[in-house]
Length: 232
Image 1 (cartoon, rainbow, N blue to C red):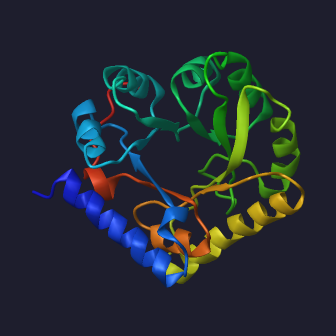
Image 2: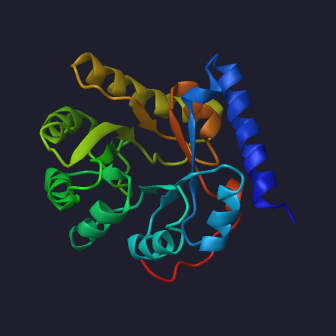
């Protein structure tokens, strides 16, 4: 059976190859290991391979995992939907939240962020391809929301996150991601100090990197087939 160590090496090689093809530095792309539904032992094994950034979708499951691994210097990213009644858990336990899609949620996270912690790093989730099944802000609504988020003290807006519908082939995948990159560039041109494009997963990380992704969210290629989540 392929180990997490071997899988991580393979993913890093894919990232390196994609960066080389796009004439980008490998240091420009962060690997976020998506550990949802996998237990603390899997995360610990990955951390022993110098993987320190982990993404979680199910907040209650993640909080329990974070507590069990509190002795490790890990960085935790909430990459799943955040219900209002779970916002305090995210504000208290996570370092990043990628799925900000409304001002009210951002305000709650800002207000609930403990004062002894650094501001919560956040991304606005954009529904870049207008999918009826995906959450996120419409592209033309991103700039007004971003400007509101810049006024909140308990969070720091870092960039954009997308989960587009699967597209057939590298060219089609890249075309969708380039739309997010163009929006990102527009926001920066408007004066917003953004530095993060959270886009690309196991199936399309090469296309995302070619389009300018700075953070790829990879789960299956590292941990294998998903187990069933027990707590969400």
